Every structure is written in C-alpha cells, then in structure tokens.
Image (cartoon, rainbow, N blue to C red; front, side, top):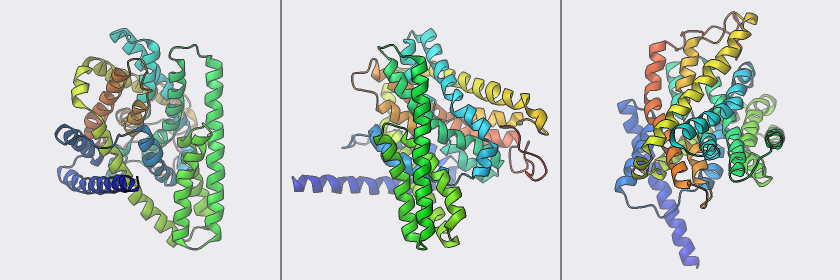
Length: 420
C-alpha cells in the first residue's frame, strides 16, 4: 500500500511540475503574440486534451474550488483597496446580487423557449454561468492604465458574485424535482451571506492582530496563507460560503492588517509572494479548464450553447445598462456625472466566465437530469467568453479610449466618485 501511495504522490508531483513548465512556456508565447495569458492557457489545454493521452487523475470541483480558487480569491481581495470598494459598492452590489439572478433567469427563460429545456434545469445552467471571472481582462486594464474605479467595479463584481452564484446554484439544485419556498430560499441566501461575512471578518481581524505582534515576514506570510485557506475551509465545513468568507478575510487583512502593524518589508513580501501564487494558480486553473472541456462533446450541443451565449449577453446587457447604468443616471444629480457610457460598454463585454462555472458544472450529481447537456452548455459559454470576449476586450478598450486619461477618469480630489 505504501508503495502505491508513494507512486501516486510522485505522479502528482510530476504532473504539477509539467503543468508549471507548460504555463511558463505558454506565458512566454502569449506575450509574443499579444494574446491574454489565460486565453492562451485554455486554448493550449483544449489542444492538449485532443492529442495527449487521458490524464490519470480526475479534474474535480473540489480541486478547483477548495485548492485553486481560495488563493486566487484571497490575493485579489487582499489587493482591493477598501476606499475604492466603498466608492464603487453600489455598482458592485447590483452586479453581484440582482445581477446574478437576472442572468440566471434570462438563461433559463431563453433556453426554455428555444430548446424546450425545463425552466428549472435552465436555471441551474444560469446559476453556473452567472459568476464572472475577469482574470483575462484585469491584467489588460492594468497594462492600459484604465480607470481604477472601473477595474474595481469589474474585479469587485467577480469577487462577490462568485460567492452569490454558488449559493444560488445550491438553491437551484434543490429546486429540481421539488418545490422551493422562495421566501425560505431568500432567507437561506441572506443567512449564508451574513454568516460567511462574519467568519471572514473574524479570521481577517485575528490574522491582522497576530501579524501586528510579530516582525518576521516569513511568519506573517504563513499566517496570511492559513487565513486564505482557513476561511474557505471553516465556512465550507459549516455549510456556508467559503468564497465569501475568503473574500472578506482578504479585504480585512489587506486594509485593516496593513494599517495596524505591517512593516514595509512585510507588505513588500506579501505583495510579491501572493502575486506569484496568484499567477501560478491562475495558470493551473485555466490549463485545467481547457483540459476538462471536450470539443467533441461541445459539437453535439452547439445549438443550445448558441442560445445560452445569447442569453448571457442579453442578461448582461440588462444588468449593466438598465440596473447599473439606470441607477447611476437616476442619482447622478448628486455628482458631476453618471457612469460614462464607455465604462458600461467595457463592463458589458468584460463579463467573462471561467473557473467557478467549470467547477460548478463538474459538481453536478452523477444522476442529475440531463447532466451531460447542462455541462456542455456551461463549458461552451465559458469558451465563448474566454476566447471571443477575452481576446477582443483590449481592442474595445482602445477603441473607446478608456485609458488612464480616458472618458470619465478624473482626479478623485477634484470630482466626487460617480454613483456606482
């Protein structure tokens, strides 16, 4: 038994090293051809799945959700400035809560009308594809010097709607084949959000106080790593949202923790190490996304995939232009201007789907009705957004002039933040 365990461990290490090496090579190639890194990784994974022998291990939702995502989510939330988030909170809240529901309902309705898929199964698909993943565009924002508040809106949406989408997905699964009390479901959703936020806040606060008592950047790095994964695992073990807990823990440590007791050396060490970990985890996530998707299977579901893509674009347009843009325009009398229309265009097109959608699709129970079709639709939507939208977002940003001096970008000291 020991020999087998050792062999399995060695194989896992070899596979990990191979994936890291591939990520480095693909990254170098992506830089040369000016293609988003994450898109290049997905395409490589798809190609590798076609020609390489099958992997000896299964890509599971636990691998993506519990191993890879907490580090990614924590790094992004740790870097998120609370002041920027507070100014953009209205927009982020609309995108992350009603925005998720609008997209899920749009997908369910359009699939039911066009393909005959039962509404409750379409709602499961909608929940899976409602979580956005801006990894392919945030780096573009930073490289082009796009407005920081715009980047905060897009990244903040992703951090929070990952958690809400997972909760809505669980409710959607429960609704298949049984009646669901909408009031009770909303109460469950609200309790999950509140309890998960409390868990993340407590762990972030405790980690901040612990870090303030020591002046050893290695120990402080260790505490931050334990906080990132501890928040997820504790919340998940209590049947709450590990994603929301991790996001909140990262925000607390990155803002409160920095303010009360991090030396300049510690801050530099944490920024550098977490940036590297995020780069590595991003590479592994998107390689595995590509490996998990079968192009042969997608070809069999091309029609429902096409309708689902239309549905997410319709849902996204309603959320961005009607909910966010409309709300901004209605209350803009308090400010010099509403959210610029150019920002809304970028927000609409940058609503990419990625690792969370794939992980949720993989987590469907084996006996779930029409499981294969629902997975194929979800994978197809993910591929469309990553390859089509991910490769054209930079062109859109340049065309709209949403750069460091682009539309709507003004100094915060001279003009109040627009209502977001």
